[in-house]
Image 1: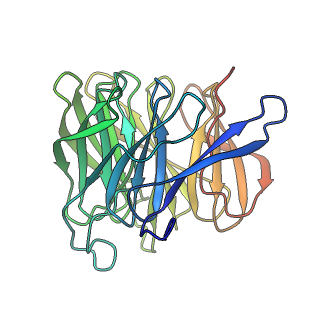
Image 2 (image 1 turned 90 degrees about the vertical axis):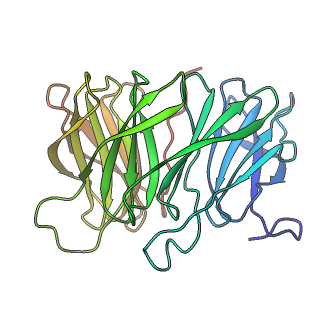
Length: 296
């Protein structure tokens, strides 16, 4: 990918019309690496943080008062590789996430089998290296989710179809591995990769999507330890569930199926945490990311 002749992707800023939801392009800036795949905005609204999958970098782009993006203020290159040929020959930053206090940023790197940790300064728009948490060789960490308590962090690992639980010390910005568990049903022998991971709003359950098995893996979360207990699998209603989100009420899962071109709605049983298909389906070509719109 190239942007203005340079070997990099780009991040775009849009103005949203509050009445119609229409978007107007404000500007674009180079993302600090090839293949940008994930972007978040900090609570101050002054910085966009981006992970570049192809380039194996993470970057910060300051946001002006007018909503336009400024050039990259900080870029960090990941290092490392893994045993999975073709997927792990070099680093692949697959996401960038901030903790609740936004003092630290975390990037799961699928190529390096690590979660890289950075100190984040919102005022300066900088990321400073602060260590890394290793995962099993060949795991391929893809996305992560914090527990609402802020005490635990979970990664979903694409290549080995596992979820890893970490305890998190928010003062020190330190992660400690608790356990790693499979997302696949016992006896599954086909090809499958995980995609998205989310913790329920009440912190009692964790969900992960399997692309191939085409299911939602469900785990109970022990609030006292952060550890996971497998609680079964739910059919997800389509092929290759690349992304899903829990709606703001916490009662529904919306799952996007990249290969069947559908979004399914699942209702969560509040007692058991088990989601079940409602039969409601939306047709949409190759959905890859679903985000709830925050209430105004």
